[in-house]
Image (tube, rainbow, N blue to C red):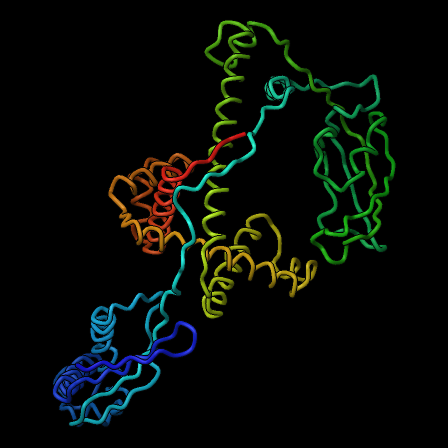
Length: 430
């Protein structure tokens, strides 16, 4: 086999591969045998029809394509390995010349990994701002804990307060039409933590049991439904029930109920310890992010448009799936934000992703960082904890998905490079 290389635009390389005539003929005859196994030919059992009959039945060109599909993957891999090509996509055949009795010539194109020029990535000295614990953080945590263990009591002798839960019927109208999905019966609305249209919950304060009334609101300009965006609406409301949230008393008995504590002071100490650990985690994450951003910003790389386009397509599918899980239609989002605006954001996100990945790979190569079994085990343990699964169960679930395994391996390498950077640079928290 003979291979000649030619560098083309950006990071594309063309390989002209010549396969000796005998090897090409053997591949052709092998293709005939394979095809004869599933082609029905009158008067012959499968696999027994002569070559000339198979050629008439399926066509010489179809046999040549089968021969090339069987012959070229190994030949291409060999050419890539022999020429030490760092490719980032599967090479593809763009042309071939296949005449029986002659050498087979195949034109292949491959996309090479862009060359990364690293800036300084060791012995850096950086500062990040301390994630200070707010003065009222402890009290807020206690308030949330009390609220989590609160009870609800029905009240009948007063109007609704802004801290109540109002059980309501509502029916909405906009532009003279009924709002699709804009009605419900006996809906429990937490007036203090409502995610309804701005101004909706506020207008329910001061109302009495069995009151029937109308409220007027305006849908936000960024609302996902194009027909309702920025539009005024009227809702018919009926108060069916008023519930008051009753907080438990903060005492030793409560502390013993919510955890392995004897006193309120023990509970407060545990919460304070958690806040401190959360602060440490935030400082660590901020330090890693600032260091990594500094290293990436100092690196230089020309990213070809083909890579950006692929990453944009991948991101678009990810975002569609994520939005669908939230009940948001992609087409409606495009209409609301504008196709050009979304395309620009996707392109920017793609560039960041690609450069981050290329810089990580470059540092790993320069420092000869290799993934060990322990690295993957640690990553599976982290993911298993996040999804409430045992690491071995997660491995079984993902074992049939090579893309998922490759993604997790890349995440593990990302962690390894970030650890290397933290160990070889100084980040001071101030």
